[in-house]
Picture 1 (cartoon, rainbow, N blue to C red):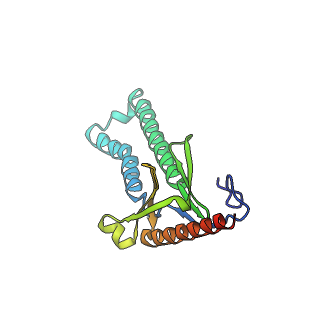
Picture 2: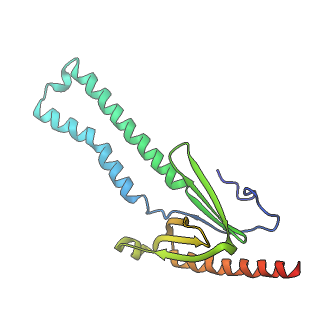
Amino acid sequence: MIDLKHLPNQKPDEKILLFLRRHWLAPLKLIFFMLVAAAVPFGAYFVISIGMPNFFTHPIFYPISVLAASFYLLSVWIFAFQEYIDYYLDTWIVTNWRIINIEQKGLFSRTSSSLHLAEVQDVTSNITGVVKTFLNYGDVFIQTAGEKHRFEFKDIHNPEEVKSQIIRFADQAKISLQNSDETK
């Protein structure tokens, strides 16, 4: 879990300005898919019991079908749990000095990267689709100077506002960096 009071390599005067997670509707398609996938064994039971009424009374077929359905449902549960972990643990933190991108990739892999706000060159927001437009969530892309890699904030709430705030914070960081260079 993320300790917001003690970020990695935190400067003494570093304060958290934004803490972002994916929008709560982002996994809606996944939830629908999981519910449909979990209903498959029950539908198969219903169809088989109508088509072959004695199938589930057979001493070999019944335990094998229960075992197969259990394995299938366990697989669906593991996949759903892994996707939930990926959804919940993807976080983005904007401080007065840097942007921290924490991405969960699978159950046992996490990527954490950061960039200084003064290095931000371009911030773009992207909202695609009817649902995302009406509910105001989408992506924010952050490009730094001299790098081809860009940070991507996926499925966050109010991406236009987040973009404006990051641009403002980046401008403030550049000004404070220039002021600190002038005082040296």
